[in-house]
Image 1 (cartoon, helix red, strand yellow):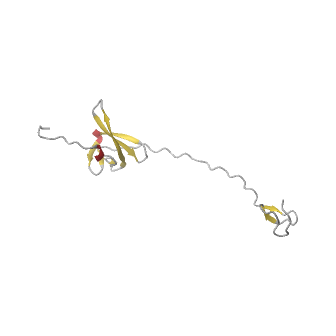
Image 2: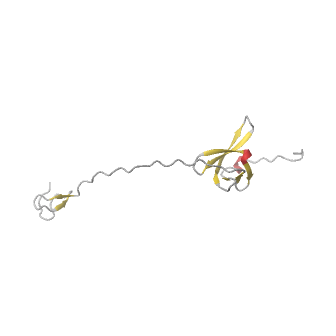
Image 3: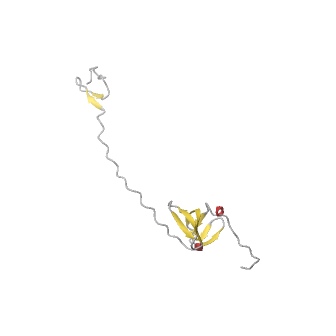
Length: 123
């Protein structure tokens, strides 16, 4: 770089929210933040993957940043953990919806106080 060339600095807001695409064209996720390694003077993008986890993409793995962030390698994302299998709870036997009338033996709704056929009191 010559003395006359100016360094190009980009604000972190330029990266936030951009989609991250790997070399094969697969969508990896969206940029969440810009991380700085002070000891190594290195940068990385914090990317929220499609699965919801966060990964760090070192600056050396970025090929281009325009409308999207294009990586210079393919990325294998960890597979999402399988959803736990939930066994259905067996339903308890429903209480009988009818009872027999003590006088005429007709099927009477269990909430009835009197038999609709003969008029007898249901206990």
